[in-house]
Image 1 (cartoon, rainbow, N blue to C red):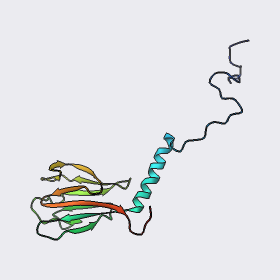
Image 2: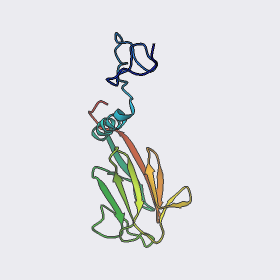
Image 3: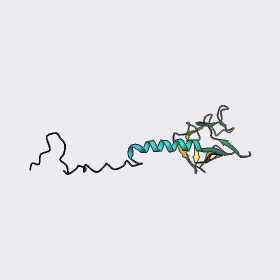
Image 4: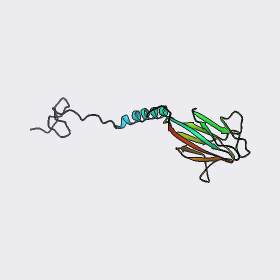
Length: 154
């Protein structure tokens, strides 16, 4: 008997590396690598639709205020055109931006300010914000609150 493959290029039944003809290939896994991106996109769209966020703003000698983060981006600074206006010298005109990313997460980015964004007494250029995270700009302390949208079930 010859060890050479059949002339048509196929392998002989029962040869190493072939499936028996009566067995089907295994079912496709839900977490197959080519599907992970699709599953992540689907989860992020659901997260964007079902989560709300707001900033708890504490300024010296002022009552605390809650500001909804209902836009793709929110700019903080001294300029009157900013979404959150800080009336203090340590804040730059356009100090920082909070943006909602594709995955529904929030990130704060320093816009080249002189005094920066301070987290745990360290200056940061950018940071992903999670529920309860605190940061300081000038004398103002911010806390992000992320939770389900009222009336929406996840």
